[in-house]
Image 1 (tube, rainbow, N blue to C red):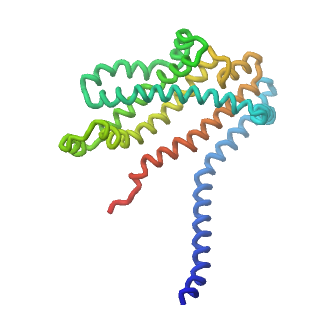
Image 2 (cartoon, rainbow, N blue to C red):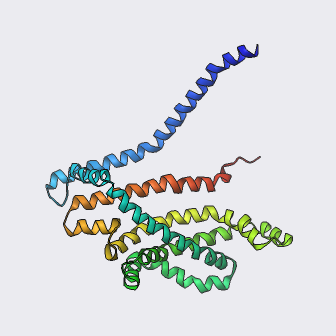
Image 3 (cartoon, helix red, strand yellow):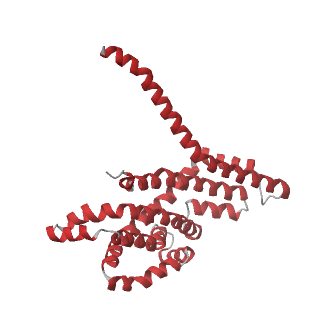
Length: 278
């Protein structure tokens, strides 16, 4: 009898899996269709503009695609983008190491908030170009230039994210920590870091959009490799196809990081918010 039930359940299980797969496919298509449509409109508009102008300054889509395929197929694009992302990562880590203590202190102390507030506002208003120029002047052609420039560029956004995370902490939880006299290391590991996780990820997403602009400027002015250096090299020869190809390659890498890393981390950090209330 049990064997007969198992045999009868198999078609139902296969049907349920197929229905679930179709539902997931429809969900993916509904999310990706507007993005695909955007790229179609963008490429179509550029191609129409290139054909109307007939100018070497506005190459057609085939020329840009050919140059993009050349730098990707040779592996050169991956090497240069990897160098740029390595520098950005080091700058992010440096900024995060500074933002965590400052963000926590300014969220807990009104005096510290007022003390650091002018510096945070200054960091938010200074263009990335200024940090790039100053770091190239200070550190020259060295790894310190892009790392420090990225750190200075993204530091205010990370500090603000940490501040918001600390201020969102439930006061009852703070009272419980004081009552049980938990060790500071345990409080940091069990309370502060899990709480700040989602806010730090959100701050990193904002800082990431700032960092790539800063790193490209530093590489243009003072580095001998990286995406910024390649853009400058193509610009110096008036190779518009090369400029656009390197821009598209870096753009694609950023989209991959955004959708493949940051969105996944943000979903993981906010997974508790999706749980239904009992």
